[in-house]
Image 1 (cartoon, rainbow, N blue to C red):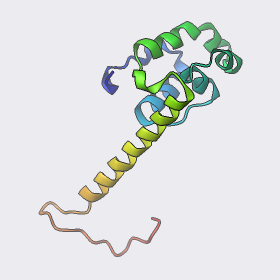
Image 2 (image 1 turned 60 degrees about the vertical axis):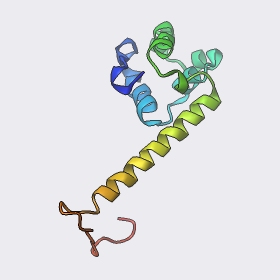
Image 3 (image 1 turned 90 degrees about the vertical axis):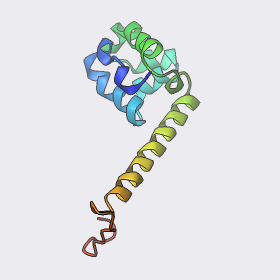
Length: 118
């Protein structure tokens, strides 16, 4: 599914942000979500709070019906998703840096006042 088409509302409110950050940006989730994403039922329940325990069916249904199939199912799949999204973020940053290096007339902007690491 495309990023804009994912409906996060089936999820308990307190985990929506973590799920969204994982799916859209590849931000490593906490222990509970990692266990769900890796398809580890035992660890999912071991890490779940009372709300997530009661809503486990909704959470699993979300991943099955809404989340991209390439982002969940095993530890390897989760690791690959995180790495791919990290690469996408880096490429986006490089593209923005390059775009910001030119003025409206296509001339290179040199800023000698910026120190390394800023």
